[in-house]
Length: 164
Image 1 (tube, rainbow, N blue to C red):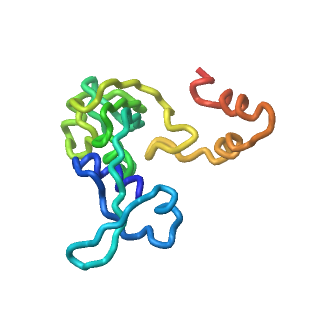
Image 2 (cartoon, rainbow, N blue to C red):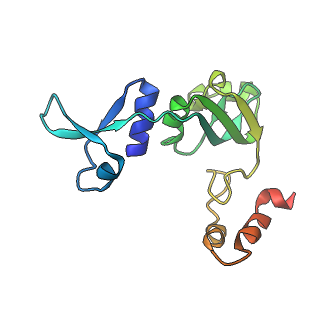
């Protein structure tokens, strides 16, 4: 929640986003977050500083030739990330027509004018999921986490793009 709060602060153009649920965690001490008083309740809340990434790279389900990007899964991270970043790059499962996106414009997560570059990368979220196209490949994630010699090479050899 604190990462998203920092991204939201940047996307809203404000210096920080108040967050109440951090008390009792070492995150506040480690990050040197300050508290402010809620002017309505008088309670202390943490002021999470704005996070403004130079570049955001997101993977979406569909994109058109103008960079209008549609995501069918949850936009929990992607929406504030694309609004906070200085530049947005999009990878997509597939290229679709602008007319297709116009059929349901409310599903467009990122408008093309915000996108600097696009690449069509089928299976680009692997070993993660891309709803509704494919689920998480848990065995591949487990192989990725293996620290034994040659494990990373074996993981990369199993990647979808290695099979092309």
